[in-house]
Length: 464
Image 1 (cartoon, one colour):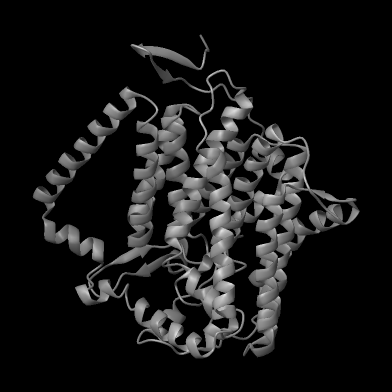
Image 2 (cartoon, helix red, strand yellow):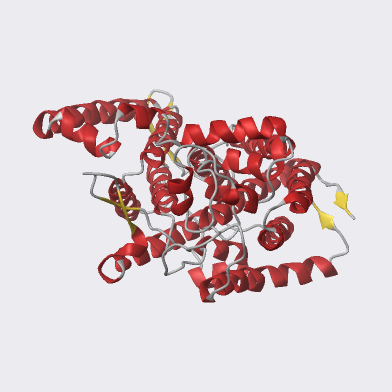
């Protein structure tokens, strides 16, 4: 019998802990795959930017961010320049071409951007990140990493940034706290130090997946899970909480299918959660729980996503008459759409937008850009799911099993990003942590897929 399983009933197995190879030090692993360093952001210890954010702003933190990206991308550029060719599967070539075409559309939009300098600067950063992804994919084809280790390192980075956010509370609370509205108190949003609405769910999802599939000591996974979940509760960001609930539900249902015992445990857990929620509602009161969740907003505000739908409606009507969009990033910053446009604009820490990544792409370069972006995301999911849905036999090598787990977990993280983009434009804005993390997740999904393609096909197409 394979040591990775044991009998728990008639003809039924329970998965046991996967014996992972010895973990490398974080520093050594991050230096080996420096694209993961982009997940740091890095943090900016300041408040928002005053003035017209459709025009360029220069200060120490902007310079530091740009230099951070250049230091990471420069070795990638040099390495790619000396490669005779890139050895990548055609499926990856297709996805990378969509990303490249999207960048070309952004380049064309500079011609009618109200802030040509800032559009050009951000486009430069967009292509530097694209180069980092391409170089990483070529590298992992030649030297595949421990893919679960990539996710564990991302969790460490998220935890470090979360710790910095917590440390800022007694020192400079204005950096990381935000008023929740009249009578709503404050929220721990992270501000420019770290995107807590993304970092906390990442910690929770990776830890929950690792716990259920015994990929690390369960005590460690539980500690990370509770830390991420507790911090997310302090953010009081409804969209992130709802998106995390959906992802955890998908994870739980997938795990329940692995064995009868897992299904029974899931049902017991759901019933316990319902009973606990009932006790809380009776003890605290349904009205208090509802007011805490909606941050004191009335139903009309909630139905419009705090005024966002008004903003999006005006943008879409504008793009019907101007299908080319408003110009990369700078255009939407200068636009005055919706009842709450000025308030939203002031809250975006100088990188604003639409509070919706899909609408942000639409505003940047129009309907064609939005279509390219959606197709690219769809193809990433389709390629990853093609291999993630496969059943790995019990006698498969440990590396294959870990790659399969990493691919599934990465897709869950990517699912969270796809949902959260409905209320967060930072997933498509260079210099923002969400932008880098989404690109890293795409690179991991594509890289893990390469590992499975390498096992099934002897040759790949060359990009000359």
